[in-house]
Length: 420
Image (cartoon, rainbow, N blue to C red; front, side, top):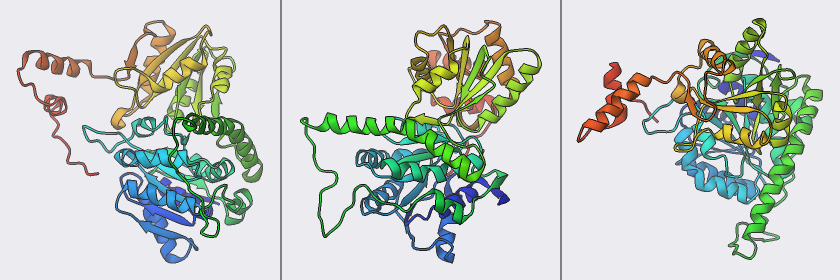
């Protein structure tokens, strides 16, 4: 059923259709509308047989999901930014225990300085936590990925996070095709837990493991992640047959077959990238785009195949490893090792800075014209003069003060009193 609906409301509806039995919620912008909507659905009886737990923190939310999932319940939670970091210890526990928890991450920047706008630094900080990470380009895909996430999580007994860009998607109103309850029931079978806490047959989950078996346990986590690379395309094909639209999968190629230059990106920026690709194609330039839907596990073979004919790969990512460089870019380099291709790492959109078609076009024109050094990390639309003034201040001031406040004064902006 087509409806004009806010992204958060659409996701809440999709989660409702998957019939979770326990929802543990702690609000943090910009995911709050999702858990608020789910609360209303439990209160009004639209979502039946569900325990809605308003916990004291994000750590409590994930801990409650771990307990509920261990007891055999289908579980759900959502978070963003610092909330995801507060969950960190419990995230590793959930994956180490092999629990099929589904979580929405409404991607938002991590402070300091505090910032409530979108980038991918939160999800990227947890890329090695053992969770499958799926990234949505649109609100339609966010809906579809949540339905697929439950099937994926429960078929392999692994936790899955569905990442959608905070505010850009969560608060945007779009036309979304919301599935019916009958469709979702047919696609997502009732949960049959692979492990279960049962007083009649007591076992220990999460026991101490010493050096004699710890490596083997971690190896088996890796095996499950690798199995997901086979399972995700199968689920996507089943989804296409059941719902009549292509959604999910590992990658989203766009005009890459003959492209000499390919832009790699995740999330909602793909729409802008594809528009730039079309414009450059109209100008006779051989450009394509490769969207990464599944970032963890990393589909190295599929990425290598998709980029195997390119001469230049431009990785546009909304996070980076401070002191090292691009995160997605390094993964792309691993996938293209020994191929005759230059990989350019470009950091863009940090803290919600717009990624415009004009800026992307200038970047790609410079890459095609060999005016960009592939060995350096690049920052799209970086205000170099502002940075240089602050570096000069730091060199000559005995107590130069905090960078953020200094630069805000330079550009005549008062620091925001943003809330968590």
